[in-house]
Image 1 (cartoon, rainbow, N blue to C red):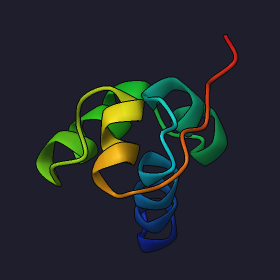
Image 2: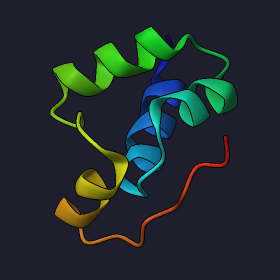
Image 3: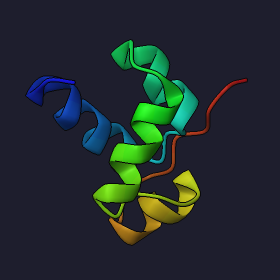
Image 4: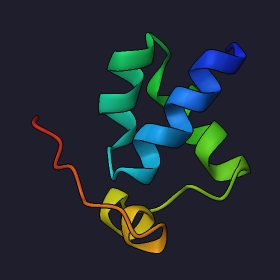
Length: 62
């Protein structure tokens, strides 16, 4: 994981995106994204993370 991917994860997570959607965009595994988010206090439901940062929620299409 490089610095660009880390910034992407933080940005997308703060917008309310889920682990799977972020993993697809960054070409990383879902577990890598999830572990990074846990380590940097961005874990939990996407909507809750977005609300904590005052951003509009983006819903993930499955």
